[in-house]
Image 1 (cartoon, rainbow, N blue to C red):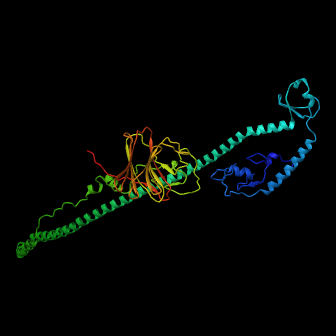
Image 2 (spheres, one colour; image 1 turned 180 degrees about the vertical axis):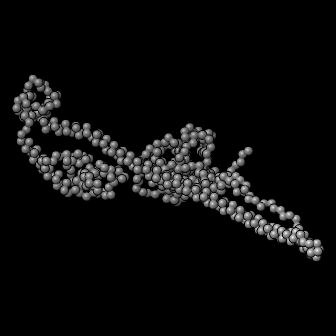
Image 3 (cartoon, rainbow, N blue to C red; image 1 turned 90 degrees about the vertical axis):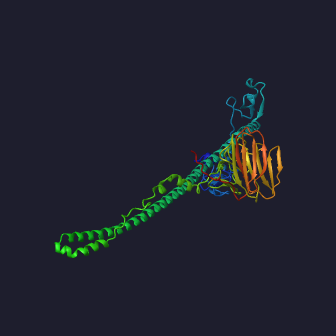
Length: 468
């Protein structure tokens, strides 16, 4: 044991010799109590040294280390008892240092106390002075320990932030690839369909012309044979010519000479049908697979129990163990998520499909509100709670609405410039409530829900308008 120092057997948290040491899967050891205190209020249990996650909230004891530490403590206790028998002596008077000068802040002997150097000074027994100074030092050390703990918590949260950034990058990349694959698949199928239609028209029209060419070729061949035989008769002697003349004339008369054949209209490829306004035609068909939603939800603002759809248009709530980092944009007390963009002028509308199995709220909130803790004011909403619908804006408006049937779809219409915020029941086309006030700050759409069934922002219908 003499070859090892006490520092080799010190806990990395309290820096004291291990007491009831436990060992993590990463092989790092800590005092059991120190580790449990360190893990207080931490969502993901990590090693304080290497940050590797621990799968066990109650790690096993390190019995070998415990035995070594107990042996070390016995050796240190023996050394202290031995050294206690040879107390330090005063350099000037070779007396034991039993007093502590409060003025000079140093141990002294009884002879020093009576010397001119310490005239009118105050003294305390060394054990009392040591105890007082220990308590004072411990008091001074406490802010440093608290600071260390806070910084360690910040580092853990920042480590989670790095993990979340990487996870968001992977999720976003997958979503982008999925969308572009869908577009590519659509364009590829559209190209194949159009090429098939072109080849079919080409084949059909070519077949018609080829059939007419075959008939024309037969007519040409017959006429050529008649002409050749007639020219042959013309070259015969007079007697022979005259003997076959009537038959030759009759053969010529039998050849029916119809009008020269002509091409009918529409025999060529209808190119305008295939390539005219091609990009517009494709885009117009693409509208069926393309949608636009005026409000896109921001996952960075979502309270930890909320889960968002891949397209960031719907949100639900479920109790779960969070692995998300704490960031200033995120709500911590309300199950709320914000839209990705705020409004500080103009008119804006969006529709929300709600559920009535649990509480929900829909409205706008000032972008600058503090999102940690209670939100006393700065939001306007229609909310559903315990079977009742209310128009609410703290601290002045809390009105129960008369609604015959549960609301399924709600439209939010914001006229920022005129200071109007209206809510409509889309199924009955009735105005539920209108807030009137002068808006001065950027307003952001929000959804609050405690339902596992998603509340969804509905896409808008797309239309085409031509301008000349």
